[in-house]
Amino acid sequence: MIAGLALIAGVVVGLVLRPTVPHVLEPYLPIAVVAALDAVFGGIRAHLDGIFDAKVFVVSFVSNVVVAALIVFLGDKLGVGGQLSTAVVVVLGIRIFGNAAAIRRHVFRA
Amino acid sequence: MTSRPSTSATELLVDLVTNTADPGYAAATARRGTDARRRWFDRPAVVLGCLLVGFTLAVAYVHTHRSAPDVAKVHNSLVARVKAAQASGDALEAKAQQLNGEIAKARQQALPGTSLGTRLQRAQLLAGATPVVGQGLAVQLADPPQPTATPSSGRAGTTPIDDSQLLTDRDVRSVVNELWHDGAEAIAVNGVRLTPTSAIRFAGQAVLVDFAPITSPYTIDAIGDSDVLVTSFADSDVAGRYHTLTSVEGISFSWTQQRRLHLPATAAATPRYASPAPSRSSR
Image (cartoon, rainbow over all chains, first blue to last red; front, side):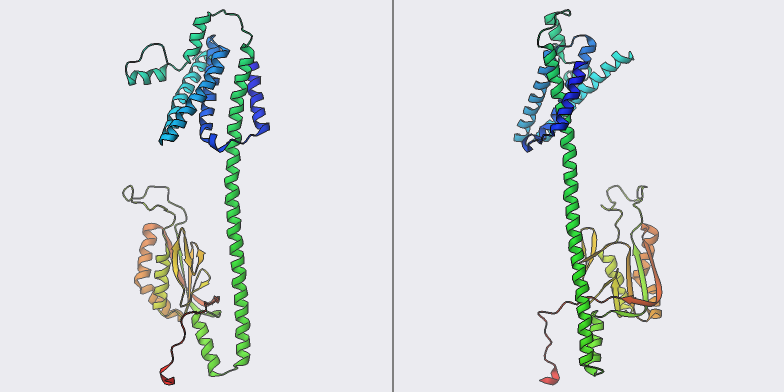
């Protein structure tokens, strides 16, 4: 409940402030988005499994963003930034799909 | 992803697909036990995390949708600049034609009915500096209306890059050359009068006639003896070739005999380097 409200509040804050993304951070935006979605689905699944932990939720989200950004940053410096960015999106995307499937099994028992 | 050691890359991949849950949650539960009390930071942490997630998504949305209008804005401003340049070019062209008309009138007043005046008029006519009327032939040449959705019969990789544009400057040029050959005295392509210095070129996706871009359908108006023009043109290799292309590639190609064609004048370029050679008689 409170999590949903906070999520909506975050969206509203983002829409109201409309911050400009610095040019340097632009390549990391897609990674941040996928990591955010991964955190949300992972959190919901853990909640439905009854093992939700607030600390794990926050730390996993932040660390996912940071680690993914680091990997891509390193890749950018070595000339494989685009490929590594794809790799990060694929790995996190698989997790999102798996978690969504787990949530579906919980909700619909199917 | 799990505490179980993965021995090979394949196992790692299988693990990745089958074990999507973040192991952190399981580990935390195992550490604390399932019925642990709420800690003081649980609720603020969830709120903070959800705020961050929502903020990230909103920022990404705003960013994507802000940069898209930027692209459109740049495109629109470029289009506006091109249109303005075209309009000013057209205005200058019209002004030049009007001034040319005034010059012609003044000249006729100065040299009424003399042989010099007639010769000048003839030269101007041939140079495309005066609008002309007369009987002739109008040739229409047009690209296929829509790129065909069905795969072409050719091998893969042999289809042209831009299927919708089959006709290029070469096609317009060959028709024009054929018409000159058949005895045309004045020719205009899509309303652009050809002069002795005219060039028909191809740039990007447009055919350029004297730097004026024209697109399909191409209408080539030629003034001359219309009977001769029609029979010679119908007999020519060029007409035969485009007839074949009509059935094969779907271009449209036709010509009609015209009783009265009106061709505009063009502001003829003033020769800057070429000057008349001294004639033999004056030596």
